[in-house]
Length: 344
Ligand code: SAM
Ligand code: SF4
Ligand code: SF4
Image 1 (spheres, rainbow, N blue to C red):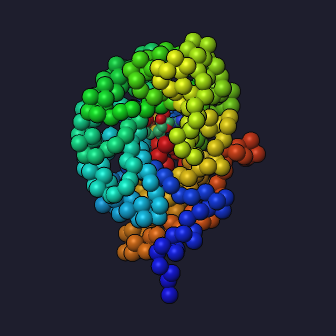
Image 2 (cartoon, helix red, strand yellow):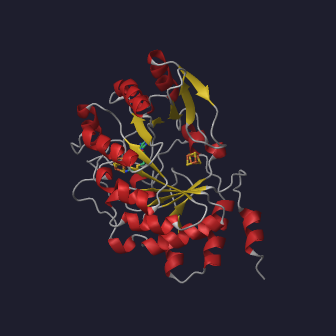
Image 3 (spheres, rainbow, N blue to C red):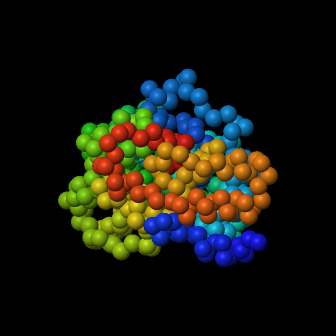
């Protein structure tokens, strides 16, 4: 006889390091209209790159079914990501379906390129929060980073449209890569302090196997904070909740805050409560995973919700991941999954 769900859940809802499963990132497409040099470099993601066939992608119904099962398992937050999630056709419809799940914090990360067109519909569909990635206000720098000649002004229009649609506060993600955009740190901080959005700086990470990552290219969170503090004094702020990935810093004059995500120099694996579902339904328990667990196969072979729940419990209860804490110990290169596929 199987134990009742509540017992099953409480028995295995923590991994081997005692971490509960709280957030889920779902990648809805492996495609993107940008070729950011740190994520989908053109040399590797060129015109001959084989993206997934449509039939390989989880359908909206499959995504929502998994979301419900995960919600039952204790998930409180779902982030829709990609690739670029707004290139997935009818994404608003998926948002509407997910927003109907009670008690879920629903959010999405986008490069902002299609946001001017879609912000109002996303809001109306029930999306609660949005994060927009932007790496510089300098057109030449931004174009060198997105590598498709996309201008800053159109992302700013998208951010304005999101604000007009009622998203508040909006979070802005900026990846900092040495030699490319560190001079954009202070102008970005100034701009988004004035606009009232929360800018979050992300240390350049060694995700995937294609971006040619080197430690020398990482601008540390500490350096980022020092640069800003020289121009606009900062003081540390308490985290909003346990396990918050971004360390918060407040402007001393009370004019807002920034976040710094020090995934490389100050690993936060100890509090990592995140699972990821790739575009084709593989469950990953770490951004730096080399293998996933095939939930799509289960979905498409007639598994019941209890079967799915048991499979997820099983995977999570055996989880030991702490890649960022032991990054330096890897002597041989790992075959890591690309971020555009696993969902950033
Ligand atoms: N396309 C959307 C976007 O860019 O916002 C969503 C997917 S993207 C993979 C999610 C986040 O991961 C973005 O904020 C992006 O800047 C960040 N990212 C991608 N590659 C990264 C890397 N190598 N190091 C740090 N952050 C990275
Ligand atoms: Fe596309 Fe986002 Fe990756 Fe840039 S970071 S290539 S926008 S998925
Ligand atoms: Fe979580 Fe893996 Fe990142 Fe550590 S390296 S914080 S376990 S996703």
